[in-house]
Length: 73
Image 1 (tube, rainbow, N blue to C red):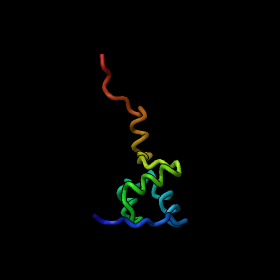
Image 2 (image 1 turned 45 degrees about the horizontal axis):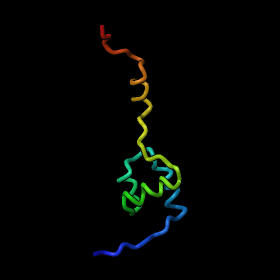
Image 3 (image 1 turned 120 degrees about the vertical axis):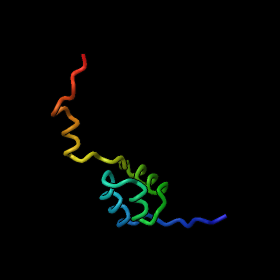
Image 4 (image 1 turned 90 degrees about the vertical axis):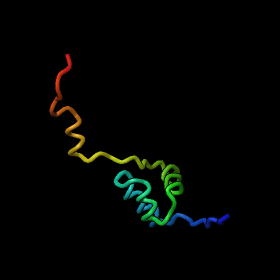
């Protein structure tokens, strides 16, 4: 059984998490921070920070009905 060490979140860690949130998958953020995905998700939740990825702006506009698809009858 391994013993996990607890590493406190520094101001730099939190700033990097905020900067990467919604831009990169949570596993990638965790890897860049040197933390587990679980620890990263828990910290984001404590900060009320969403890690759900945002769609790129160009993809959003194409899905918003700019060009309608075939009409169903």
